[in-house]
Image 1 (cartoon, rainbow, N blue to C red):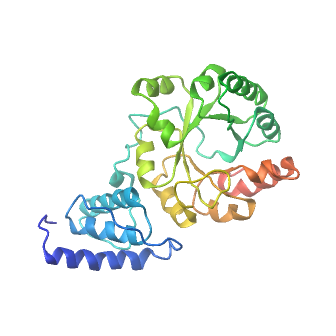
Image 2 (cartoon, one colour; image 1 turned 180 degrees about the horizontal axis):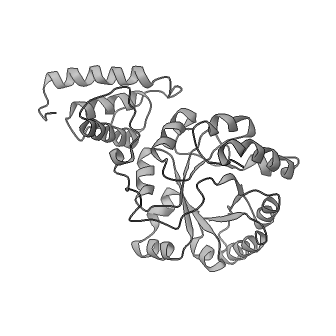
Length: 312
């Protein structure tokens, strides 16, 4: 491939972009075209992919990430394939396995993953047999937060549930939780020293992602699992990104196949089959349990629906 940016390249990249869109439009249906970001390379494959991925609705930093990966794929294979959506970790610059930077491992299949508002709910769902639980306790009172985390750690004792704490990592270390879950902003806010403290504590780390660029960012720290969403519209919090849908979830799952993966965001029992068909080993639920008339019965039903993924 050559670097000269002439009319042939533009023509080639337009034709390649059209072929990419034609092959992949059905997978990513439901997204409107977005403005392509300014290119950072003049390679025809890169330019084609940047245009195609923007047409398919990928936001600027994800389109850029995909365009670079498509360029890397074509260099690695020596050919341009419009059919082959990039899904090789090395084409995205992900860490080779075993990872040089990595948190303590967690099970590959985390199963039903209940995100819960307080320690009482954590205990209730742990006793109901839910394999993975997260305390997402919202308070600005540090004492209340510590107390809730300590109570949640005690609440899962004597059960098989793995307890992740949302956000409050220092308190989670102090209380002896199994792991913590951080959003992208929380991850970015950690200093190198804090990240080292967290890694050497032995706590497992889960990270939220909403697209390719955030997955690449998360991979750099080698988390224990990666959460991907929101899959469907969710009323729980204002999302900066549009719902990703199962088409995107499927390609994300292929790229991150060497990680335990959690699908999250607006997922109810009626969507479990199509979400599990993407290959993810865990589904996070909030309302499907907390708003259920009989949360224990709902948990049992959802765990039965998880069985194809977990093999239990």
